[in-house]
Image 1: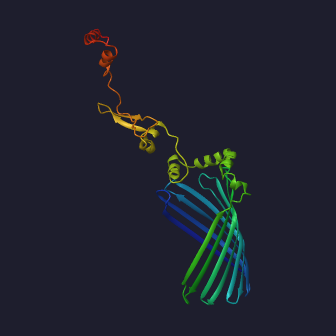
Image 2: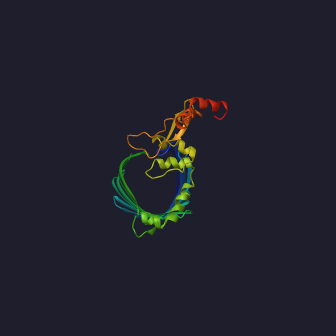
Image 3: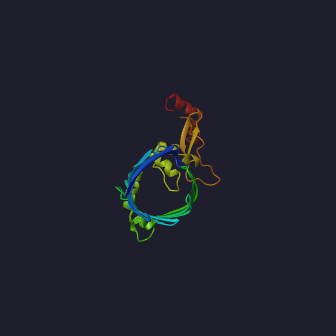
Length: 313
């Protein structure tokens, strides 16, 4: 009977390709194996627990924290040059990503490995793994969704006698799928317009809770890099500075005769072959007085001079 203790710690700091800045992650996992062994077989239990924390200090300065637990059973069989190894277990993760409430992931998994020793120091190994489970969110009414994972690896490894070193070549294959079976109401109720309209209140709450976890500038930078139709509710100063409004010529800046700059709206709609943009800001006060009195009202110069002397105009 044996007891084995394992400790694993990782830390990463890297560039975030989806937004300016850097991101960091760190995690640790502490586990153990309790097993019973005879010359041909091994039976045992294993378990582990740990924590993983990540921070995106570029786009949204978000921090997420996850707690991870694993428990299961394992067995090995030694058949000449062959070793057969298998595990079955349960894996759970509980976390708190910003804006999504609590993220719970529960899965069962099975792993099998076959090793063939070509020589005492050279072995050929094949491994397959399947995990199936469900991810759910609490606190915001978000739907759960089921997933399936398949992994496979083939490896040829040679250990150098009398040293702690080895060399190997390996090929890895994996596939991850969300389950979109129509029997899962929680997965499919938002998949089309009819479902979204029927569940619009719930969908509104989900989106509102997600948006509430971000500042406007942060989430706007994220959405601009996606295919999601989105736009801010602009104030008047926002409209004047909006690059799309400026590009379309909906707002123009022109100067008057005294060199003063004015920002004015352009005419809508605009027709092809016609530039409706305003060309001037208007005349100075009194600039058209003589024209109106003489051409519109028909007054002579003497009459206008008389009115001016009397202070009427």
